Length: 452
Image 1 (spheres, rainbow, N blue to C red):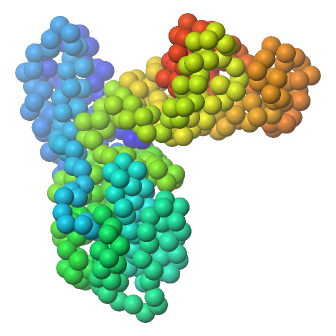
Image 2 (image 1 turned 135 degrees about the vertical axis):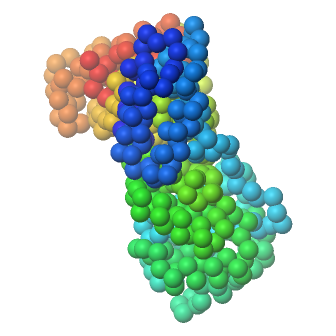
C-alpha cells in the first residue's frame, strides 16, 4: 500500500544528516522531493501546494534535539501534516439513532460498492453485534442485485428482494419498512452507479437520500482511479451531504493520491479501507496509523487488533502447551502458522504494519510473494504424517517424491526444512507459540518470500 509514495518521502529526508537545525536553505531540496513525490502519487495540486507550504512553515527554524537527526525531525513534521490532511481524527460510524440506522452507499460503477456493502455488513455483525439487512436500488443491473443477494447469504445478513419494474425510491422505502418490521439494527442500501457522473444518476441519488434520510451516506471510491475518482467524489459531495468515504482496492494502490486528496476535496472523513478481495478485508481508517505506514514506521496497533480478530486462539494455545511440555515444533505446526499468516492478508500485509518492514528494503514489504507461502503449504501437504512429525527422516528419495507431489523443486524442500529447523530452535528458547514468534524468526532468516 502506497509503496512508491513511501519510498520517495523517506528518501526526501535522508539528505539532512549532520545538520543541527532545519532551515529554508537546507530543507529546500527535501521539500522539492516531497512535492515531486506527492505529484507523482497523483495527489490533487491544491493539496500538494498546501501540504508543502505547511511543512515548510513548521520546519524552518526547528532545533534538532539530541535524540533526533534532522531527517527524523522532518519526518515527524511530515507525519503530523499527513495526519492533518487525512484526518485529523478517527471517524467511526454514527449508529446512535432509532433503529434501523440507514447507511447509504454511493459511487461510480466498478468502485466496489456492492462488495463494500457485504464487507461492512460482516463487520457490523461480528464486531458490533448488529442485525443487518442489505438492499439494492440498482434496477438497471439485475446482476448487481443477484450479487448482493449471494453476498448477503455468505455473510449471514438479511436481504430485501426487488421485483422487476420497481422505482428506486419505492425500493428504498419498502426496504426501510421491512427492516423496521424485522427489527434490524442497520439497513445497508446499495445504489446504482454509472461509468461516469451524469445528472440522471445524481437526481436519483438525491431522491433516495431525501425519502429515507440516511444516518450515514458513504461514498465508495476506487483508490487506484486517481484524479478521476477525486473529481467524482467532489461531484457526489455537491449532490448529497456525504458523511464519510470508503477507499476500496487500497491493497493495489502504490501511489496514495486519492487517500491524501479526498478529505480536502469532499470535506468528508475517510472511514474505511478495502484491503483485499476477501469478505473480511475491511479496516477502520485511522489517519495517524496510515501516516505511520506511509513513512515506514509501521502500524503495530492495527496488527494487534487484526491478530486478535483473525488468529485461531485454540491453535495458538495448543502450540504453546505442546512446547511447554517439551515437544518439538514440527512441520504441521509450521503449516498452521503459515495458514494463519495468509488469513491476516499475507506476508506483505504483515510486514508493512511492522516498523521498517522487519529490516526489508523500502518498498519490498508490499511485494512479498504470498505464492511462496502457498507453495510451502503445498510441500507440507505432500508429506506423510510421519514426515511432518519427524522431518529428519526426509532423505533424498523422499524429497524427490514430495517435490513431484507439490509441483516444486527439491531446493525448495531444502529451504523449507532449514526454515523449520531454525524455527524449532527459536521455539525451544521462547517456550511460547504464536504467529508473532514466526514473524520474529523470519526477520533475519530464510522465509516464504525467498530468503537468503
